[in-house]
Image (cartoon, rainbow, N blue to C red; front, side):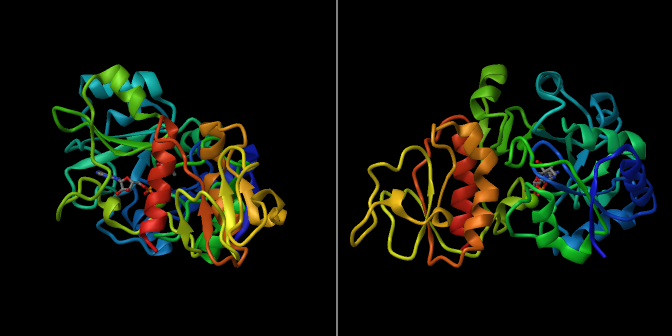
Length: 329
Ligand code: TXA
Ligand code: MG
């Protein structure tokens, strides 16, 4: 039986007890819901892969209560120190060399000499890590290849019986997965755009490379080669109008948008037109993206027409997820 639990202090203790005995618990973070396991327990981490249907070559992010705990698992360098001091706790994941004496399951690294580390800002995630007394390994709490969950209900829909306990922390604040930066080379490399933007990174670090697409046979981030974030309904990007039978995922005003064959987009039924942000606020759009895609995907439409989103700040992360979703279809 799968159950959604309010994140009361008692339920957080219960969740920690489950984690300690090697079970999985879904937990809220400020980005998306995660499927958590005790990161020091091989058996528990292995069951994450089984529950998600995730290829075992895809490594998992480990969540720490603070930087001093993360330092026990990975080797920091000056630039990584700077980013951690600026953006932790928060939606930023750093790829760093794994320490030989790290007590983190090797499965989290999936054979790489590195580990992805982050300190989540969500109070429930923080409390759960503290209650467990160990770091938590957690990918997004969805079946591999489908949309990331931004509500407890999304987790339940995607993973069902595969997770025994879902801690509810309401709708998440950011709505997109954390920014992933590889800090192991001379020049930091952005692997996955997120709420800590490329502009933020360049402002503080100077040169930052961008490697979002899988480059060759050995992509830096194994997750890059996977079909990701895909709804079942086809997406049509940069739409300037709506075709009959389509739903509209808007950004900004739709006052002047038409429906092919006649009619105005604003007159579509309310369940066929959702707006990521009427006032063109990219933070609001990011927070709405996955839940609106989930909603429209369930509506049985011929396709989802998605309006253009500027490639600025968080827009880069939103467009990355949309392109992957469209490319995976
Ligand atoms: O916001 C988030 O990051 C959420 C919450 C739960 O923290 N987690 C998340 O995890 O999105 P996941 O597993 O769905 O995505 C992690 C990405 C994958 O693309 C994976 O390949 C990459 O990070 N990754 C993990 N460890 C890595 C490593 N050592 N080197 C390169 N890429 C790594
Ligand atoms: Mg994921």
